[in-house]
Amino acid sequence: MPVDNEIYNRPGDIWWDEHEPLNAIRTALNPARLAYLTGVLRELGVATAGKTVLDIGCGGGLFAEELARTGARVIGVDPSTTSLATARSHAVALGLNIDYRAGAGEKLPLEDASVDIACCVDVLEHVNDVDAVIGDTARVLRAGGVFVFDTITRTRLSRLVMIKLLQEWRLTAWMPANLHAWDKFITPNELRAMLSRHHLECGDIVGMGPGVKPHRLMRLLWQLRTRSISYGEFGHQVRFVLTKDVRVSYAGYATKAT
Ligand SMILES: C[S@@+](CC[C@H](N)C(=O)[O-])C[C@H]1O[C@@H](n2cnc3c(N)ncnc32)[C@H](O)[C@@H]1O
Image (cartoon, rainbow, N blue to C red; front, side, top):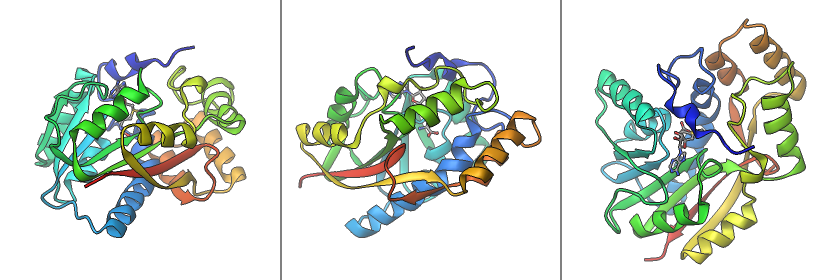
């Protein structure tokens, strides 16, 4: 089954409404992503304030808004104009100045060497051509620029968790069918090879996983199933943490040589 990217063109607010599945991205993943980004930038001695930060595949702006709050000049790019409309109106309502542009990661609507930091979170497993996205990210990054990403790897465990448990099994599934396809998942080694092909030097890769024990996770899945909690609350409860276990989700970074 191919990935269904039409999900992001559904009408209505599919991103910020806590009763929509995608809202769980914000509450479950954003805290760990921000912690990772902050840690990497601190280690590299790079600040976000005043810098141009690109969010590739920004969707409804869940992560772009977090980036804007750090004082960065944020550009969000996404092929879904429906999601971009949601992102724009949400940012305007909060008084956040974010430059949202329609486009794909494979052909970014940006000048060469115009971006200090590029983020691509939960997107690489959705695109048609990962190598082209990495290549175009390398093109728009300035020398010394940083690329930060998170995605899902292709293992037996990721098939069990991301496809069977979360998309297919009647009693536990809550993600939209075909949100993810197992064969689109990318292993850290595959990604490292692509980064290196495009002259981006890959740093440490870390795992990302639920901050709760499996029995608590199953209980929360049941509460979601019986509608006792919203997707936003579910994400808040399972709140991901950085781990050493890269068998399902992982985050990493790469730098462009100066
Ligand atoms: C799971 S969502 C993640 C959204 C956002 N990064 C976040 O974490 O809140 C995947 C996003 O990737 C976008 N997408 C799909 N194909 C893409 C492509 N070729 N280039 C850039 N973004 C793409 C979708 O439109 C969608 O907004």
